[in-house]
Length: 337
Image (cartoon, rainbow, N blue to C red; front, side, top):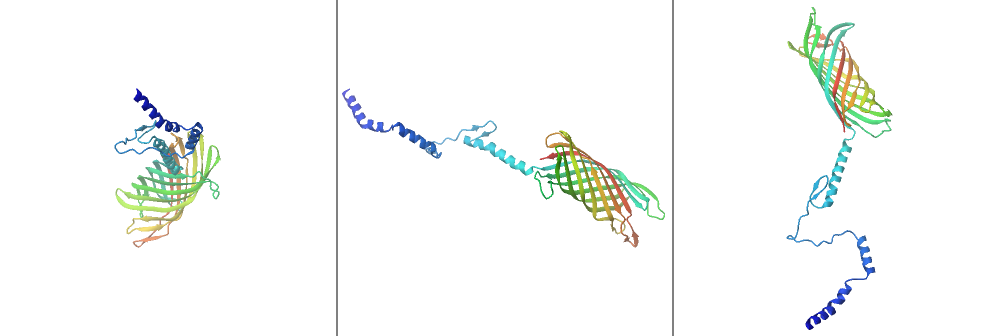
């Protein structure tokens, strides 16, 4: 016990002063805590050795599982939302539509007031549109700009009623192949007339090709081709929250119209005064916010002037005046991004 008491005394003399100085006064403690709060957040962890290292435990977020530092779990959803916003902003205003195209054509050729021949029948095919509508107002056009690329194609065997080249002229009636391809681009602007109605105007640039002929008993073939341009106007009116009705009307003026005929060695007829028009009535029912069911009846007409004479195998031929009337129905879907 005497030695134990001696050990206690020695321990107190050696360690007690250091122990006392290891606990500073309260004001020193408060000052140190204040400095620590204002200091940058720098990790003071002692690096672990290879054998001491333990991989971080998986962190399970309520929406997605992340592995590693829990702080990274917060950046995951934020990055996904940011990426989605970039994609949405890039696609905003774009639209795509397409579907079935049912068409009825009535084509006729005339000499003065006498009908020479005609083609009549139903055709079907498809259509596709790719559009963009900006939400930014442009002062130069006093509206918000838009662009719409369109393509239509339809074909079938239709009835030809006419006569052979005389004399003598012999009446002829037969089925012949018909195929029409139309593509174009509308550039214009739109603006709101009031809450439920928007008005638009545009310039249309396009091309039309009609492949005509090739019956079961003959390989005779004609191809009518021209580019066109013209103004158009229209409006869309919201009848109900999910239902809208519109009207779209345009004029078309032919550029470099021609008809190539597979007659003997073949010949190209330069047509004159080709002009036409079209009116359509688009009806849209919105199945979802960005998805609509579309039904669009349309009517198209073309007046084609007589060509210059063309000499083929020593004989002069003329393509007479002609008229084309088409009634059609587009049925499909539209999606707005």
